Length: 280
Image (cartoon, rainbow, N blue to C red):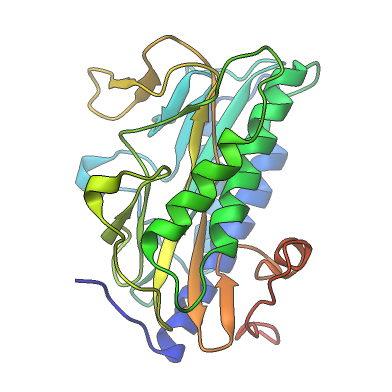
């Protein structure tokens, strides 16, 4: 069952999404050489408290931290700690969520730590982020869930790797419905699996977290003994980007972007819905 939201509920999700955007802004600034992943978790916890929000990660299935911090070959669900020190040249995915009045926001971004990153890493993050926006641009009335998957995969497959070969689209994890819970139906693959069919039709009130995860090598992953940390099987580095998106009668609204996705989607020929928090 897909939860369809009212405009009032989407407005609450927008409030939560704005807090997530502020968490990302603060964590990006704090992700410097010498900082620990726990330092970033402390920053996120402070921002949530300042804006009257709670973390939807902390305690979820026993997860012990406020955000996920996934460094280099860690794809997702990295647990912040005081011993993982960020180094010049690292990349880190910061996955964060917030809850306002029972409504959820969830987003992730890839951050470059320090300087001197190889062009292949810069391109990996660009391709992953742009594939997310391609998926967001497919959130429109009349489309189905598979159209989002097709847009994400199609964008990635059209991009040549600087070092040759193909990017690995992570197979075991993907996007998800979001609303009164963080993870809800439907599950969104970042590639087209024909056996799954076309999925539900996109209608106003449909909300989805779109989150491609792409590696420089294999699409295969494994989970470490902590039961959370997910790494690529071949040790290749990966990028992770995510936004929560609502479809309204007037078009899509990127709930976790400061401008609601207006600038980026305009480049793709898509007009965003009015922002219910524009004056808040």
